[in-house]
Image 1: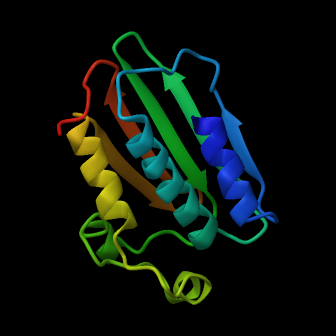
Image 2 (image 1 turned 180 degrees about the vertical axis):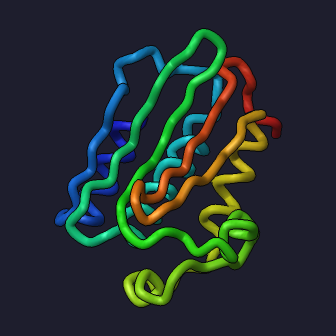
Length: 148
C-alpha cells in the first residue's frame, strides 16, 4: 500500500523526489487499508507542499513485534510553535507560501490523519525544527482494527 501511495504522489508532483524506506521489513497489520492510504497520502501531500522545493520527502516504515511505526519527513521552514499546539484541529492551515501552492485546501488533512490514527488505537506526533526539518511520526498497534 505504501508504494502505491508514493506512486500516486509522484504523479501529482512529478518534480519531487519521494523516497520509501523500510517497506519490506514486516510492516503489515490489521488496519483499514483505505484509511491508511488516505492518512499517508495526506501526510505526503503536506510534506511536498510545505517542504523546501527541490528537497526530498521520505516515508519510512518500521515493523516491531506488536506495532508498526512510520515517519514522513521533509526539510524546510519549521512549523511555527504557535501552530504546533493546534495543527491537528480542523480548519488549521500552515504558512502562506504553501497556501499559495494549494489554495483550495480546507485545513482538514491533519485533523483527518489524527482521527484515522485514533480509530486504529494509534498515535501521531510532530517534530519540527529548522535544523532537522519536519517529521510526522505514527505508531500503530498491529492488531487494532479500525472502530466503525
